[in-house]
Image (cartoon, rainbow, N blue to C red):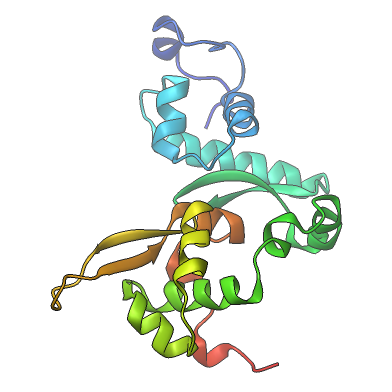
Length: 190
């Protein structure tokens, strides 16, 4: 892939078309406050070929970051791409943030979130049966934080609500999709 777009792209009055595509992709991702899908990045940049160009630019950027020992990479998270610090530096970032995201979640919230993540879509009654305690307030708290949402209604009598996780949950925990959660059989008891 050429560092510069084709002449036809420049002719379409694309902002910064004279700059390398990798720089433009990097600028968009650094400015974004949430993960962005490859197609959305391509739209913002006005790329004709779209997502394949973005993926190639991201591969180029990540290779450059790794070759120069950078502490970050562009990762697939919550259905999009985001610039993230490498996991080896997690303790440093956690200290800077004051362990903000995880520390604010109580043990009850983490347990409830785990049940929802692994069993979704799930009824509140089923969450309570698994945890052995009422969880209405905890669910409300997780919904306020946009980590859990109502995903539908059950066909059971009374049509109770079904709960599931959100893209904010994926973003907070740095995973691309629910399928990236560790398998239950791989988890060790403390």
